Length: 202
Image (cartoon, rainbow, N blue to C red; front, side, top):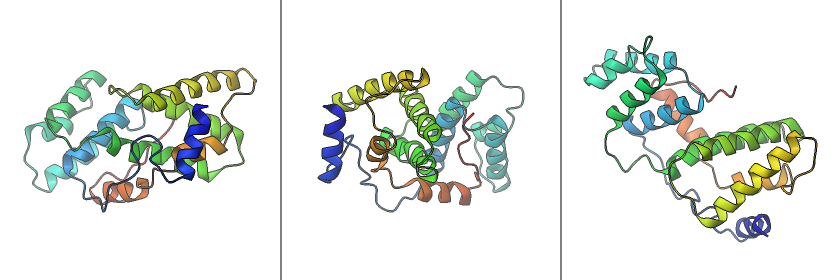
């Protein structure tokens, strides 16, 4: 029933997860870039070397901030220390919302899925990364989304064991990811801001 509700909502043009892309033309701040770096580093998509590269360029541009200097010197820092440094730099902001992060990370899942719709292994990898992303978030989800993610988790476990799941792949993944339209726009701004790295799945 939950899967069917998602299909119906998208067909009617409703907000599938309460987070349809209502963001108009994006103008990212340096702290939003750091938010993406933090989440990507936590997920294993970005490396400390890439974050240091970005921080080095900010220093060369004359950006004066103690935390940026610290981020340029990550070689001997632990993962937990790096996350604390990024948090210190981000500070308190209402710009790093789940909606914003969804647009980038779920938008990337959509890009990967669309690159090879006929490949079952690609769909399973996308399932895995959707679950990995949602498990990394601290916020509560709406009930429909929470139930859909639970079904997706069970579905992925079944497929890994050679069984069929409830989710139709790639059809239901396409529907779930359809709202996320801003990945390329955000990635373009990351590139232009000295962070030319796309997520890398292990």
